[in-house]
Length: 213
Figure 1 (cartoon, rainbow, N blue to C red):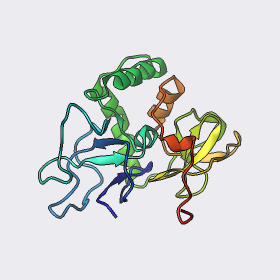
Figure 2: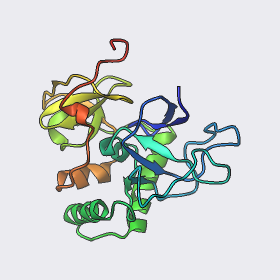
Figure 3: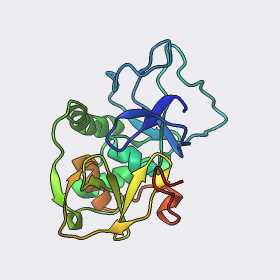
């Protein structure tokens, strides 16, 4: 079934045999038995990284090291409260900062991004309710839910149901439909102002819905 290191759009960490296209971290979350014992540490820098960079290799669930997490794609990572890594994804990090400056009027440093994103994710993981909006109010790359537990990626005018293995067949995205917004509010603003995340190829070639493989 795989290790418990696959992140959902809700920022929860689950066990799955799916292979993520990006990785990241939010500090040391596991114990000596390779089990997740916390959903966040004191680390505010929740980053989203390449799975390969300059031949660097890090063992999974290594004692005393940060927990390597995996995401289906960047849209998933952004929804979960992560942002592009300034080291292995420098161009994307700068593009994210540029869009942030268009949204909020100033170009942030990494610590500014982290300080802005962390409180909302802390509240999310404490169970505070998500804000609501209409689908028409959300930009491409944002994630929302119309039904509890069913994350949807908004992309090119369609809503794509999320799974760890990819997006299933898209459904009609009625602009007037009310949804609960999963992606943090600041990140939604960044998406609205031109940042385009990497999305899984299943948006073009959907995977089978769970239980129908």
